[in-house]
Length: 142
Image (cartoon, rainbow, N blue to C red; front, top):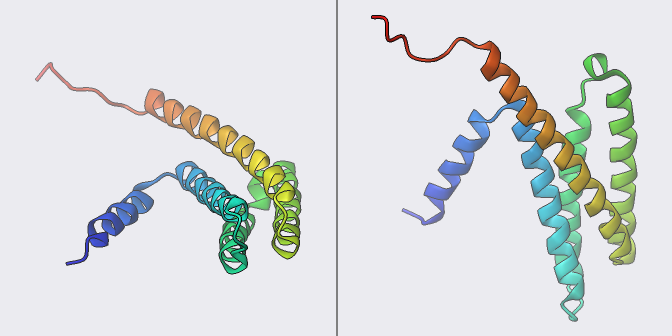
C-alpha cells in the first residue's frame, strides 16, 4: 500500500463532505497554493519555465472551475461581478505565464486572498445560521 493512499482518502472524504462554501474556499486555497509555487519557482534563480508554467496553468484551471460554478440566476449582479473578476484574474495569470513576471501573480494572489476571506466569512455565517435554526440538542426528558 502506498503512503499517499490514506492522504488521498482523507482528501476525498474532505471534499465529499464539504459544504458548497467550504468547497469554494478549498478552490481558493488551491489557486493561492499554485500561485505561491509559481512565485517560488520564479525566485529560485534558475529559470524553471516548465515548472512556473505548470503551476500557473493549475491556478488558471481552478479559476476556470470557479467561473463555471457561478449561478447567474441565483447570484444576479454578484455572479456577474465575480465572473468579470475571474476573467481579469485569468488574463493576469496568462500574462504572468507568457512574460514569466511576478507582478501579475502578486496582484492575483492579493485578490484571491481577499475573495477567500469573504467566502470564509459567508460560509461561517451560513453555518452558524443553519445551526441556530436547526433543531438540535439532547432530549433529557426521556
